[in-house]
Length: 160
Image (cartoon, rainbow, N blue to C red; front, side, top):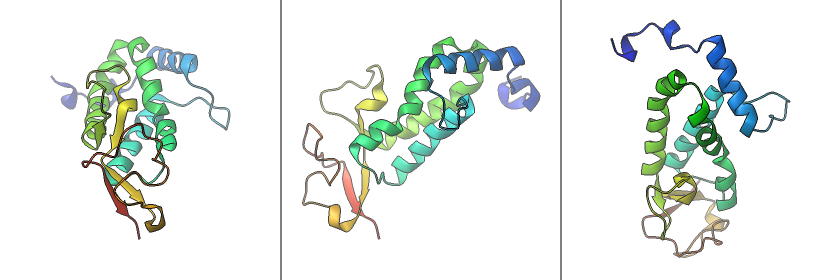
């Protein structure tokens, strides 16, 4: 029987697995503003939401993207130390989100595809800006600090 045929209860983490995941998160993730810890599901949801946003056209600046990928950094830090069954259950979802993010971005020049923390060395293919922020053929406002010219495969679109 494959995982798709298993009852949903068997895919839920046990209390021990849940505690192990929360302990792993506590080692690397700061508390949220409300004083609670983030959960594994919340990390996966945030990574998925960021992939959605990048696919549709990322509308924030380069430093904000660096900030937004915090969820993937935490996932990478905890993944090797969470229980194997939890990894197995979540691996397909994580891989799917990773692939969507890769397809919606391009690799920075000078970096290799298999590099550790690969997600930080990528730029959205589609940057959405206010018409007043678009500047000729180079990077729009908020991206001009990029250490290389804007590749032709990175499109800048005006919203509105």
